[in-house]
Length: 418
Image (cartoon, one colour):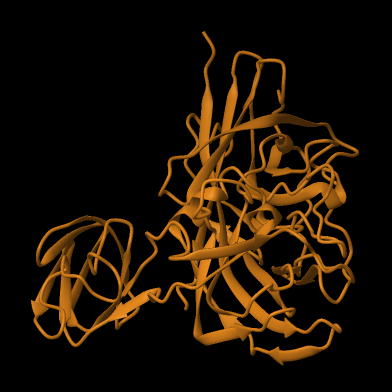
């Protein structure tokens, strides 16, 4: 019987936010109106999309509409949280969570997020008259709050959608500054055959049926936007992704079954993102033909492989950018083994577990010093292929009677903004 060593490792986290920029272009190509940058709300289904789509794929299409309901509901009422329950404790303009308000049949619905004045967030599971069950436990005193309508699935009143990209480096592409990557793409809608006042925008993976289109995010414009006949709507969407840990971070006694083995006495170490391995957009608005973004929540199988290595080279500091040296090669001169990953995800979790199993024939050394994951269509522990690495403080060991199961968890969150 194999003596299996298992680990749930990794503190990999990604924070997301989106920005819209809008223009109106007349039939001569002249820009007649241009907006300031506008925030937008990433919806629950948009968060779930990332388990199956790469980042650049969640805005393959731009959707426009004429709906008027907002993304957030405010009131003069107050509420509190005790454990997994939120209750209305000071009744103002909102007398019940189930009352019709702001264009919604129910002010609060399962999947919405309550954000307290102190910043605490609680995603709703079940709603009754003046109380709601939420996903995470907390103690929050009575205070004002907002209801973010993250349970929405589409625009309120969809009119048009397009996948037509305005090409060129100023319109489509990728930029990176240390642990922050920005993907941006500009869309041109077909010219209007009649004047329309647009009020809402969204991004989507799909341009087909059904309508309304399932969207990644939604923006209610501050004011209706007139696009006259023969003019066209031009929309740029920027998706901002921040990854962590971006600097070497100490971890104490990470849980590994059957480790440490004498003479080792702990499983302490340090970890960090080494290269921001997210799939870029090019100047045509297209993603890579062979996606190799090992840090993407969706990446698994031959797109993301976990490695174990006998190298103890310190982690790259600061995080790799185009002007910094490559991370250390963890392949040569010592042996490195790697295994492709499988993944598991449950809608609403906003984290994904990627697992690889090393057989009795792999990784049998008494001086294992690091582990991590990287691009899998070539050696994942080689230089620029390395996405994430954990370096042990002490050596670890595995023999040919044991399998080793490594699971790394990646989580992601959104900035609630409108």
